[in-house]
Structure formats: structure tokens, C-alpha cells
Length: 486
Image (cartoon, rainbow, N blue to C red; front, side, top):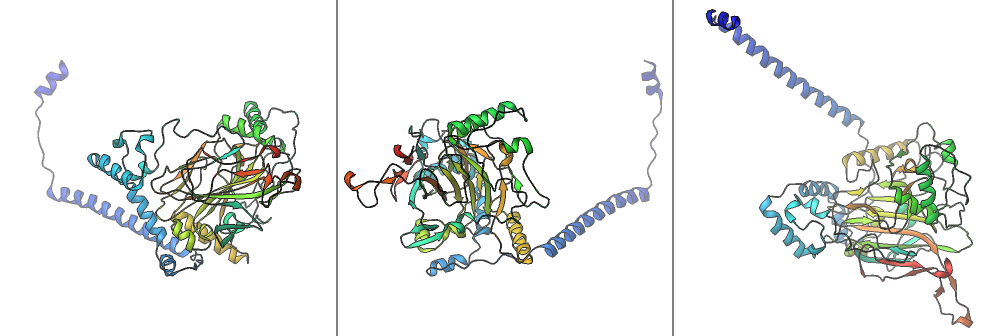
């Protein structure tokens, strides 16, 4: 009360501030702002000059052979166009245009909207979210045959067959090297820090001790046992081996415990012998390398899934070109899949070597791998890193490997990689492209003359259930291992 009375009786007097002082204050504020803006501009220019000074020269591009259409395409800035297309796909579509726009797209490219998990098309804010849509539960049931290999995605089978002399047939009469597709086996110098160059060996394991989480170790063992994947425990006791100056990063994320349990059990059914590089090893059951190429059109479901229970041990990212992977280009551009940007996942399944390769293409904004924490595709940063790696290799007098490698050893010390369950979602494309599977499987045995021998026919072993040009959906069987090989 006293304070209110005192404030009410106090006379307020106003004293004008000199004009010169006000002008000086405003001038000082403006000078500070201009100085700060100029300093920021100078810092940006200095950083840009430093980047220019340290920017490595561009890698030498491989000039493709083929008709004039291919030659013209090779001169276009397809990677820059694809990046712009990726940004365009992320532009938000006005709410009232989403339903008619997506229905028009579906009509043009044959999208089955009845299978989409989200029936309200207003939910998809842009083209990118619609491309990466999910499906309703149960619309893609997995083939019940546990010995069957599943189609990794919806698409069309472009090529299937057995790999002979390390050559993969792109089309009739046109082949490319398996080393060119997957990369060569790392040398000792380039494998520094690589914990997964040697595959796990051995059959039975010693009694487990508590190292880290006992539940995780038991889950890993169960996964390998069910899925026939061999495994050992040395890394649990000594840790992952590494050396200074390692160039191989660990991009691991934690796999699902159910995936680990299933894959571990499946791998345990194998013979447990040391596995070599992609060439099939001498085993009790004779094996060979097989391959299949699945093409995803713009209207197809763009996510891909694990064809089998297997362990992804390492990843190789080839920052290549982005030519179209349409059937026409595959018929006219030799070595298309070895030229394009791709992500090669290398590992093993019950029968030995297994690789899963999503291949980029024109207007494919990115390739996503759900369990890789470091992967960036169709990026200026990765292109610059590849240019720098090529320059460093040239300075050492060595050929450039063409890829940047990362391991998944941190995902499971027992399995030495990331466990993937049969049918589990692995990632996806921002738009349609292709997937190349290369895997080791039993060849089976030839029939005798008494059994009705016929040229090319074998009893047991790997059997294809699809043909070239056939439409497939993810979860359907593309082949299986016959009973005699079991």
C-alpha cells in the first residue's frame, strides 16, 4: 500500500536524448551488423578456397561402348540430374492435388493401390514418400518352403543362370566380370582394420562365457544353429582385430534378436569350413555360383527384402555412374551394372557365399540400407571422397579399387556381421532400379544312364522356379535347393 502511494505521488520527468547520441547508437549497431555479415562472407570465401585447393581431380570416367544413343547418354550429367530429381521428389504437393496426382501416376505405371498400407493418399506429402510406400500386412506371403530362396523385390526377372569362369551374362552374348561387379578381394595393405576379411570357421563352439550380454550371445548362437550358418567365438574373447590407419569403417547397427536367432541356427547347418572369396570352395557337397537380376519398374513396390536367412559381413559402395537400367540399355550397354553406382553387400548363408547388390540408375535419388549407419549414395560428398581415394591410390602407385568399404562386425561379435531374417525388410530405392543376387548353392549330381541321363539335368541341388522375363513379387520363390543336397 505504501509503495503504491509513493509511486502515485512521484512526479515523472522526461529528459530528451540528444539526437547525435541516438544517431551514433544506431550507426554503431548497423556497423556491427555490416561487420559481422562481411566477416561471415569472408569466412565462407576462405572455406571455399580451401575446399577448391584440396579438392582432388575427378576420377577418370570409363567411356562406354555401344550405339549412338549410349554415346550421347554418356555425355549427359546424369548424376546431377538425378540429384535434382531427388530434390524435386521431396517438394510438398498441395493437399488437394495429392489424390488425383497419385491416382494418375498409379494409372500410368500400374500401381495397385489396393495393396498400399495407407489407403488415404493425402498422407503422402510428396512423390518420394509415395515411391517408398509400404504394403498391407499379408499381401506378400513368404513361400512356405524353407529351402526356397525368395524374390527380394517386386519386378521382372531380366537374367538368371550359373556363373562360369567368373563371368556373369548380362544378355545373350554379353558378359561382365564378377570381380568388376563385386570388387576384388582386398590386399593386405588395403584391408587394414578390416575385421571381416576372414570368414568364421569351425563347427561346434566351446562353452559360452559371459562376455558382454549373455542373452545376445545365446540369441546369436540360436540364429546360426537354425539357419545353418557356421560361427566361432574368437572375437568374443579377443575383440575385433584392427590396425592403425584403418580405412574401413564399422557401419553396424543392432539387428533384431529374432533375426540373429534364426540366421545363427540356419548357418549352423553348414559344414563350418573356411569360406574363400566368391569362388565356391571344395566341400563334401559340390557347389557353384548362381545369379539372378530383378528389374524394378517405376510402378513397382520400391522396398527390398532379404531373400534368405544370411549374415551381411561388409558393404562396398561403388560411386559410379547413373545410367538407366531399362531393359533396352541392358541389351545395348556392355557392363552396365559394373558402371553404375551400386551398394554391394557381401556375406554368407547356409551354403556359402552370398551377395546382395542394389544398383542405382538415372533419377534414383538414393539407395537406402536400413541397418547401415554411414551409407550415403548419389552424394557430392561421396563422389569427392571417391576422387580423393583414387588420387591417393595413384600416389601410392596402386590401382584404385573403385569402392569404399565398411564392415558390420559390430552388429554381432559371434556372427561377425548383421543377421538378416528371411523376408526381413533391408532397405529400398527412391525410384525403380535393379537388384543382382550372386550366391553359392549345391550343384546336385548328374543322373546315371540307368536313371535316364539327359544333358544338363541334375538330381537335387539348386533348381530355378522362375524364367527370364517373368514377373515376380517379393516373397515368392525364385528357386530352391533339392532334397539330395540337404
